[in-house]
Image (tube, rainbow, N blue to C red):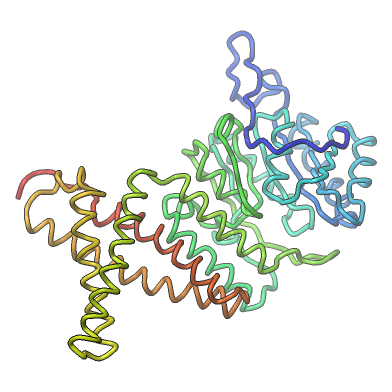
Length: 403
């Protein structure tokens, strides 16, 4: 593959249909151009790439008998990693090199590689030797058993991290917790949603629009793909031997941006807009009641804030119950069920307040984000949280019979 500067398109094409009785998804060389396309995204990895490719070739030649390809996608590395990739491509027919100019980002690099691939199964592995290549054999076994997605996880039996600091462990788990809060139906499907080492059937993501931000391509695949069966295998995340880690506060911000974007894309838009409008009325009610309590009735600050917040919650519940979720409310008639919805709504809003404070502190104290920007990010994320959890909890229809 020659150097190129294409505009990014987030769709992966289906492979041509196979003639005769063979099934396109069957993992045989007669039924598909290739069995596996493994993408290696790179940026400043010239000292690691050749070592990794040699290890992969030895393993995959034995496992798949040359019926695979390694696609190195380099983001125009200053250390000229793309030159190493091109040299390897000239030497080995299974290796292809793609140098991206004008594009940047691990997730989009992976998608770019998948777009030019020929395999029925698509995979990704880091170039920094932190993903043990031998785990690919176990991942392939999961695919052969029928898995749509085979994931290498640090959080199952046989998994772990080699020598992470306490702060890095906390940030990693904290990022996963935020993901579980905002996208429980996506992040909660796997033990290690932050993993960048996996295989997925092309048929599970072909023709789906993929539009990730940052490094966590797996979340995009889980959120937008048609994934039914997931197989996980444990692996120990290795420490980097050559080069410098690329993990910075910017990657954490991109991760939050990715979560918010995916959450919005997966939301029922009209219902969410109604929820947002009701929330704005709640702000007005909160401020108005707070003013009356403080200025007219001379109540203390804490009592005024608590009472005005509760009145705003009651206001929001009333309009959400009558408007935003009215179709669901009509299936849960009776004052007892309405009271139950109100109590759940109160609990979710309280949890949202705690989450707001937590996000602000993480962004400001740990990542050094401007305090006002941190507050805006927290408000946006908590609004999505409140809507998602209330939809799944407060207005969930589990019993439609009358009391």
